Length: 200
Image 1 (cartoon, rainbow, N blue to C red):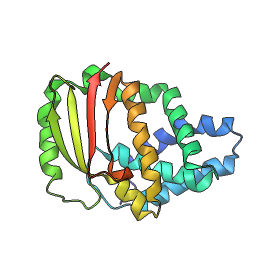
Image 2 (cartoon, rainbow, N blue to C red):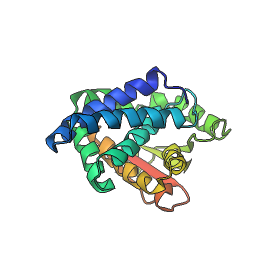
Image 3 (cartoon, rainbow, N blue to C red):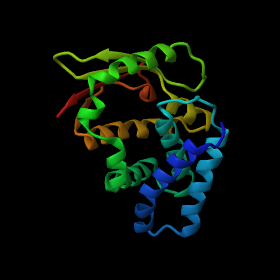
Image 4 (cartoon, helix red, strand yellow):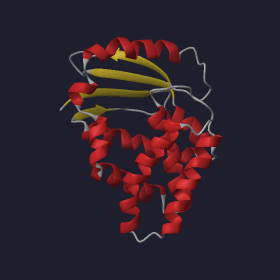
């Protein structure tokens, strides 16, 4: 994949969020720099997914892999660094938005178009998703039949890391003021990932 502006911006974003947490744990400037360099290498090796709305998640996967290759910590400890960094980032909170903007019904048409395109499987490492309209149980649902993060972790020889990135979905939902209910994920052996979002 080309290391384009989108890849660079997400890298700066995630690295900026985690840098303070890494320094709190007394990681050297060299280790912190190596995390950033490894992220770029992973991004360049990654299979292209086009101009995709899931690019932020794909690059989040790349950054998490880089953390695990450079800190010497366990995946759970690296997950905590990532989680705490995102929670502490005012910029990240602002970029995410809130439940009302995320669950705006005006976005449903675009989401259904995205779903239809995803089933064409144009890009090997892309997500494949079905969109579920809200009902009395939830406001918005996604059924992911293929996951780009799982594919990236597989390609990088670390499929076991994907499940930790799945935990971040709950973090992001909480930051936006939403409740996420999910009973299974591809990363943990499920046939698909069932996301159900509701306003808190």
